[in-house]
Length: 251
Image (cartoon, rainbow, N blue to C red; front, side, top):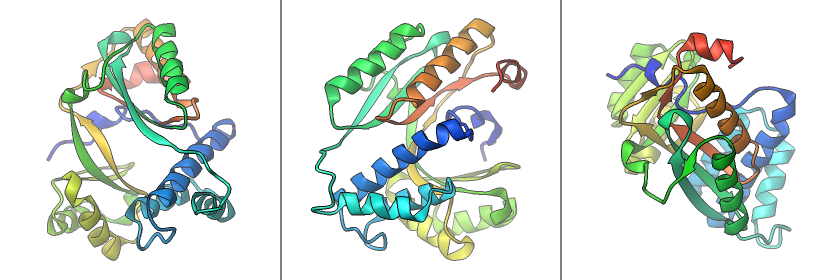
């Protein structure tokens, strides 16, 4: 089994500060609205909506905000925007590969803003599939460490048909084939309750060490800048910054 520690800073963390909470809620609400539009407004019949609601609850998003986002996604609910799922790929400072996933109602605006961010912080925006070959597309089901012991989670995940489990003091990350995500999520939920999240994500085949302080600092600024964009839903990369350097940068 692969160790979880090597992925500790691959998926960019979202700050818990109050200043960022509003933006996090906005992103979650947009995903809930789009998920509702893509199927039925009943999470029991709409796996994407169910996952979006679980992610919102994991961030302590108020119930009325969740309900309002669902309502906006129903016909006549007030949100007539047409959102597209767009993926951007490129290289950031230190030569790390980055994948940015967005939900946008204006591709030209979002593409321009993402390109500007890469240019501003010393990166290069590439074409689609320019870096995704360095990653595996997988399903990921996340649970807090308190949900189960590492052994119990591993046993349940194997029985459910998962491919890998990475457990540490921060929680459990269960990895599955993309077409097995729903089945594995449902089996684990029946045993441990709702997960913190259940989604498709990107896991790098190899990581790129970033040890130079200037490169690490520029990379963190780029990630924060992208994270602040309302259209950007997730930012992932194959970087590995030593913990002492992260501490020095305030990460």
